[in-house]
Length: 130
Ligand code: ZN
Image (cartoon, rainbow, N blue to C red; front, side, top):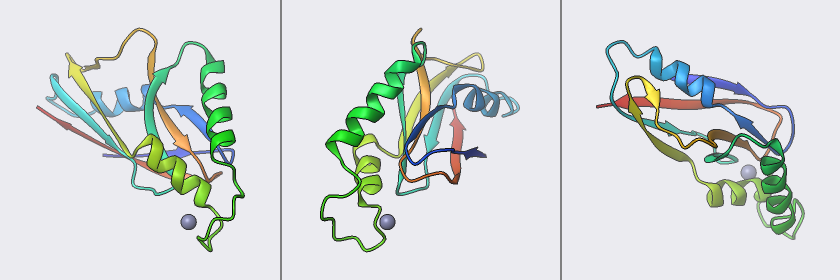
């Protein structure tokens, strides 16, 4: 299954936990196993982190932007090397266990789509297996 995510800023963390849960529930007959989430982009990523306090994602982006500035004598001619580097650091996939059709996440955890070169329309692949 492929989910579409529209991003609205150059760098942005979007909580997609509910979207992933819906995708998992739409898999008929699938109740227990694993959900594999893959981002098929080189300037985006996925991560699991706190979804309760929105200032956490603001802090994460703030530090990523500080450590990896947009301009820094990069050689890549497209001009978005910072986005590629952030994508490498955060990663293109996550795995979450599924029990009785629900994602097994910690109380404060959510799944975040990480946009590093937006705004764009992005894809998220979701594969469930037992
Ligand atoms: Zn590029």
